[in-house]
Image (cartoon, rainbow, N blue to C red; front, side, top):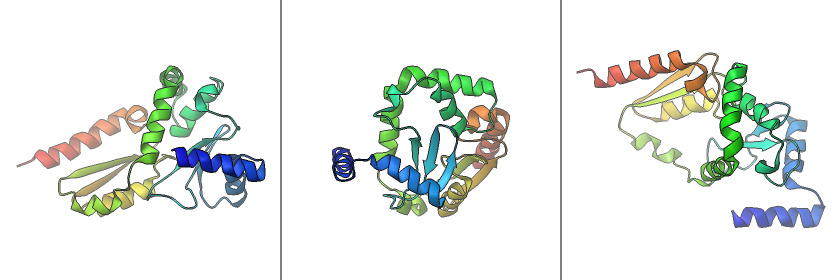
Amino acid sequence: MREEVDSCWHYYDEKERCIFCDIIRQERDTGERVIGENEHFITLAPYAPRFPFEMWLLPKAHGSSYENNQSSIYGSLARMLSPRAAPGLHALVRARAEPRADSLVAGVEALRDRPDRTAELPAIACPTLVLCGADDQITPAAEMRRMAGALPRGRYVELAGAGHLAHLEAPAAFVTATGSFLADVLAP
């Protein structure tokens, strides 16, 4: 983390611009690695990912930290996670996110800094359900299909009309898919 912050400062010292603002501008111009975006956030597949499936969820407006953003953008973050979700679900996500900004930042940092385990997927011998919302902009369906395909006993299920919060957006379909998987696994 320290190295990343130092690199950002070095870039700023040389260019007098924020590296993340420049990355967003360049990626929006080319559109090659833009996974999704809305009025306040953009999700990118980085040019040189440290591990497969790495994605960055970045605020479009320059700022020093997420917790300093206006509370109005949390609704936009909820829509980024689940674009077709009902307004009530957006309100729920926003209500959960606002008082826990430090926890959310820590979670994002932990995900970002985790080691790549892709090469270990073929060694996972147990039945594994990879469940994904069809509209997920954070972990896109195509990448989740590849992950399930690398698992010897992987099963992929895609939930129509759901985004990253599939368990909240399509709870009945989520329960059905999970229940079906468990019934198959536990069948004699």
